[in-house]
Image (cartoon, rainbow, N blue to C red; front, side):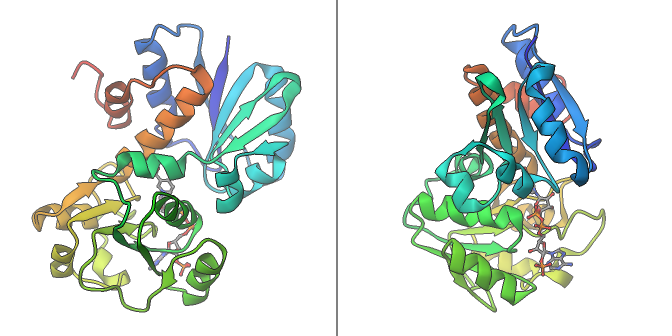
Length: 269
Ligand code: NDP
């Protein structure tokens, strides 16, 4: 029985088990399972090394383990190395650990248009921003502008991956991507913490917000109200999960099924 799972701390609210198990059921992969793997940082190494012998085919990795997961791997894709983080581990014969980062291609999959030649503004310079900036540049974006509350962190990101640090985002760009954790608290006003206000959103034809919760984030609601095209955090989650699903099962992921499960709807709904 092939088993996959998601390593995190905490991880109990993850939607990945529902998403992947719905995908297995839709494809008749009846003996596949996907489990929550709540593991504190000090136990990550020994847990990951024990997973192959316990029947695991692979594991997703989420906060706070993505960098440590890359360090544990015997082999990694060039993108995971460049980003400095892994969200997908695959266990190979003999228990060797292969690391990949599907957050980057997942972002590109989720975009409504090819980002080649475009200008993008990225808010944030944490772990997910690294994958976003790398993905946009790899896909041929012409200019990637990075704003972060702590400027020094944006400078480090741009020095290592690329992009340009800005103190104030330009009034217009093709894409605005929020990778900060602003917006996770229900009812929080995102515009108090971010360098723009609701009217400024009209200067960006497309907003991507990585943050997600049980209701649309304040940024997503404001963008929709302004008539801006939106890609929300759940779509980003679905797309990175689909890439992991395909790597492990060797089958095309049933995207609509994953999407419905991630959004808490039955696949038939
Ligand atoms: P990190 O902790 O690595 O980075 C957090 C970022 O948010 C930093 O840039 C930080 O700025 C900024 N930030 C935090 N609080 C504030 C604030 N009050 N005002 C302004 N900036 C703030 O987190 P990650 O990059 O891993 O994750 C960021 C978000 O993306 C989370 O909401 C996470 O849930 C989401 N995410 C969603 C995914 C998906 O599949 N949809 C995948 C991965 C992440 P500073 O450097 O100044 O502290």
